[in-house]
Image 1 (tube, rainbow, N blue to C red):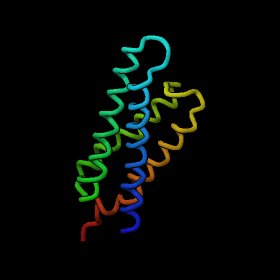
Image 2 (image 1 turned 45 degrees about the vertical axis):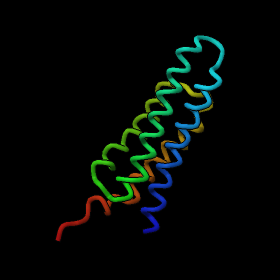
Image 3 (image 1 turned 180 degrees about the vertical axis):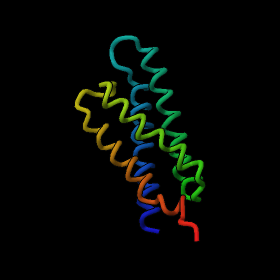
Length: 117
């Protein structure tokens, strides 16, 4: 139970991080093409909210499809890291989100794929 709780909490933290970033960019876009930034921010709010719902409801119920769907997070953050995509230029948050999402998905792997007897 501890591993499962830690897992969904890790995934929820990643989700809230994306949602929070999106909310900030939507409300206070950086200088430049503010409509594009607001659209990206709104998309991030949607992605973070959707991921949070997945982590809190079907993932906690140990529904295998949610485990597969949440693999989007480490792939998403790895792509941001490898290709130097925004947000930010320090990339520390990207590494943290990669570690959190991988930990959240790998800790409970036996609960989603139990050994057959």
